[in-house]
Image 1: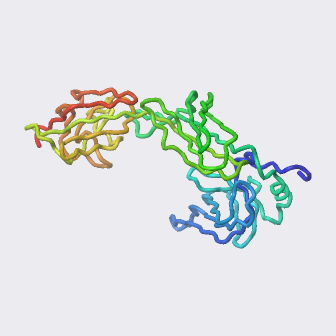
Image 2 (image 1 turned 60 degrees about the horizontal axis):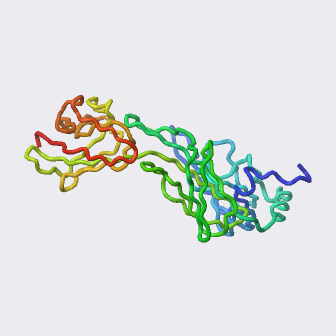
Image 3 (image 1 turned 120 degrees about the horizontal axis):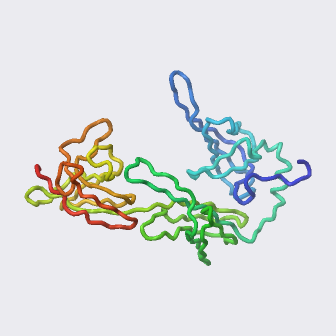
Amino acid sequence: MHGQRPALPGGVECRRGFAGTVRSIQVSKEEIAGSTRILETVVHFEVDQPLLNAVAGRVDIVSTGLSTCDYRFTKGQKYLVYAWKREDGRWTTNICSRTRPLGEAAEDLHFLTTMPRSGTGARVYGRVNEWVHHPADEHGVDYGPLEHVTVNVRGATFSADRVTDNDGRYELTGIPLGTVSISVVTPFGFHAGAERNVEVKDLRGCVAADFTMHAESTAHGIVVDQTGQPVAGVSVEAVAEELAGYQPKAIHTPARTDNQGRFSFDRLPPGAYVFGINITKGRYQPPSGTPTFLPGTAVGKQATVFSLKPGDQTDVGTIRLANW
């Protein structure tokens, strides 16, 4: 490729590039059946020359230690590093990038140091996916991209909306320097996580912000004894209608009654539910007492069924305990 511009992996604006010195390497290991396995390697760099979306100071590059693609750095050596951000927010690289010893990176250094130092504005982009959780399933499922979802991007001097395409993607360019807030305008009954606040430090840079949208509903009620007095400190459980009477393991976090006997489920996935006490089993153990389904029966098929839709705030009424 002599004489050509280096093809930077993934696009110039979406990577961090710097020349730096490895100051230390921290390796986390575990012993299994007499053998040692590397769990994670963290390489601590001192940035000698910020080149692309980077600043002077310390940068940590992380690898799992479980892949042959991991780059093997040497303490005290200088490198040109191309890094990208992992899902957990930390930075990583591998042997498939153009990361290399600094003495072998003359062409890349020339390209990076002669790039324009200004740009028309940074880029914000990402994807919105839908997460669906059926009440009877222990885990939810990624249903893929959501189109026609509005994403708002705003800073001190601007605010703009973008609508996701049929692949769930959005993009906004020309972002000025400074703090940028990114959020999803969710329909009623849906949640997409907290607003993201990021700092744009390079007009050639980019910010990737993906969101996962899921539906939520709430349910609340009260637990009383046979005389009608509220019962505090008991765990109320929510179970999918089709699992009522089978004493499944708890899928949804139980709600504990307060001093007035009140309970509330704040983030249930929509679906058909029954509510009760001692209607699920713990891990490898049976329920702690006789099951009681709302309104006050021990028979699962006699339990009241509530169909919760996105955004519902349902009062499920009173669970009456006969032997309390």
